[in-house]
Image 1: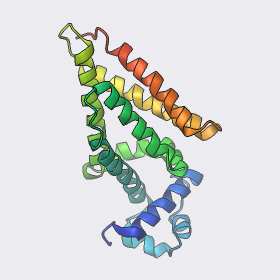
Image 2: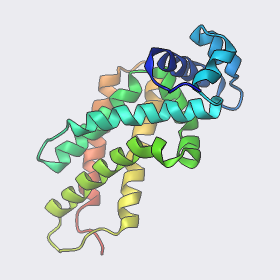
Image 3: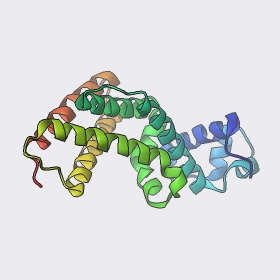
Length: 201
């Protein structure tokens, strides 16, 4: 198998996003991905071991790219930084509707089955968000109590859920992406401020 780099591998991943969005992972065929990518079915296996590896690589590529974008967000104010992180996350998903549909339908498979190296970008992005959230808590709280790890995990899950709901709304309505993003961020920031007031130990 060739190293999964270069234009051809990326073309296959882009084609896979389209096929996964249309058919879903379970029904998607490698032959359909090959046709969409304009290559022979056998050529797919020069780059990937099968559609499971394609899905893993598709999401790994997304999170790696997002992690790079996250490193560019250096706003000192942690609430604004968290706002920017969520905004970039939403923008990256909204910019490719085929991938957005694949994300909504099949990202759970990536979280369950991808190997640790493939999840590196995801872990980096989650940690960026966690650090910003904890900084917001430190700024808001005067009791000296830090939120429990479970509380922080729940808060992040709610934020991710808000992005997912906003993405679903975008895909099913004619509202411009910028309006959806702005509304989503407004509600997310209000929710974060409410959640970080007087946290319980």
